[in-house]
Image (cartoon, rainbow, N blue to C red; front, top):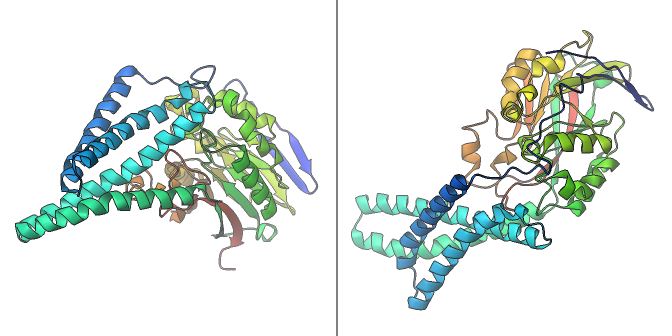
Length: 420
């Protein structure tokens, strides 16, 4: 990897930064197209439609016969499931519609249907497992009686879960305060603070007003530094620049830093890197900045998303490259990495703290149990060797506007000397 160090100083009051940047040519992210959209292949769309139809048919087959419905009620149930089956893919493909607000409204309808369907399917499957266990253990009469009662409980519970999840998703993100003990932290960096936001997913259902509120609340924290750990957007710069514009108002003594998430690559990473730099954010692409705070130095590095190389081989996430050339007298080494699974390479590279997102904490039950199959950490503060890893549950949401058991957050991190 060829490095072309560009040393530039940015001074705001007592804050001073020295930036080590790779050559612009080597680190301009690839983009799938002018608009940032990637069209889905037709065989894939057809396969998804078939699977969705089969899963909806399963729900109808297992629930409708046991519900207290007449012929008209059964027909209405079938119609509802058919509508859901059509709305879900239509909502996911709504970005192809240029007309507004039709596109956003169709997307919202499809995402709401997806959230309800998810709960319906999971509860129907759990009901079948319980009924099978009861049928093998107790009498068939008891099984039949429970079948009728549980069939009604499934859609009611799914609807309640979706309603509560929608309210949780759309409410303001809570402020989560986290103290992180760092061994050998210099006295000057005691109680150094970082405001972290992650996984906002500006798109069909998260707009400018939401971003304005986030910016106001983050600035009110008065943190020394602001970190945005990826998945900021779901859409092109052309469509969303007006909604992300308030990010220019983020204000901290040492500035605001951004690293790409996987959704930036779905949305046209090159254009978004340029746009966010225009707004005044410092986009870190396998590189670092050395900051001076009250006479002590700290290093803030950032890597591209863990999966970036699938979009552009030059964009492979590399914590070792991000820390390369760092001075030897640094008080703490901090890495911004969208996915928690960057942690093993970060620990080997010598970082003290990694800030991540990506998981959404699972976002809603039961998917929080499946996140750990892909990521080493789901949410919160964890330890890996000599590395602390904090994984944000996200400040927005992705897909269905639904959060259960994983509330959104703006994280206020305070660095403390270990044992203090």
